[in-house]
Image (spheres, rainbow, N blue to C red):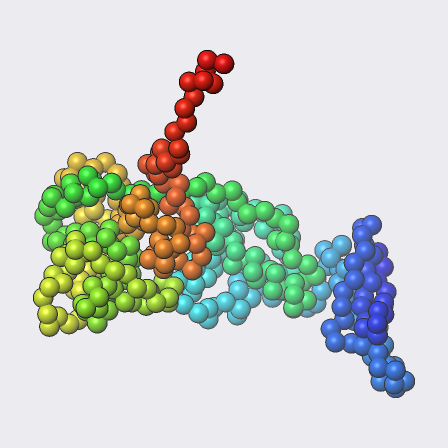
Length: 356
């Protein structure tokens, strides 16, 4: 292992040879000017940087903490870096991670300098044991980010999670309803307190693709009556969405009535557990065995729109996705589109081929 100063076109680099490999790292804005005193100071700074880099590499090979800061606990470091994360969902994720860490460590804590690859792998496997893989990877990503930041700030010598792969996740099965199932639900009465508003909002979401968070915050001020569309800034992404309404959606909210104000679905409560009990009994009364919930409506809208001929880019805009890749999962949801694609191919006369 060796670290040397290398000059190229007056710019200064560190030439690092380690484990049979060589790489060069730019020393910030350090460069020679041709002025003796200035260049002397520049080289002095470069020598300091060289010594520190060599120390970091040495510490990394021998798993030695780079500084006293490495004795800071993981819990306090995460809290100081991400405790004030923007957005309620992110703050809730960080809070969940800290709780999981506390359980994993039996109520104790671990110093940053004590964490190695084996520790992080063990934490990941522990998460996997009681959490769905995609959620486990989400929680682990917070710890990964903290360790990466600690290494970048030279609090620890190296990032122990850098070479630990994420957990393998199985592709989620999308639950959606076909037209016949939707009609069956529309004709079935849930018959429980609050179920009427849930039923109306769910069927409306099947026609618009709105998330439950947007249904609960949907106000009559978000309804453009002249254009028969929803114009709303989405709760989850903050993106402005323009969603046209068909006659079914318009009828579900009584769009023909004027002078409305306030929430469109004032009866929706904030308790998802209560809602899911209604969904279960509603589906049973309609003769549907699928386990449905609020997101089923959004999936239903997406799949039926694709089957109806909507292109994937337009659908991504209707759903408010910032990346069309997120929308592509719906293209795998049904065989009907595959059959339509194959049936659209031109028919060939093959009798001559068979005779040959």
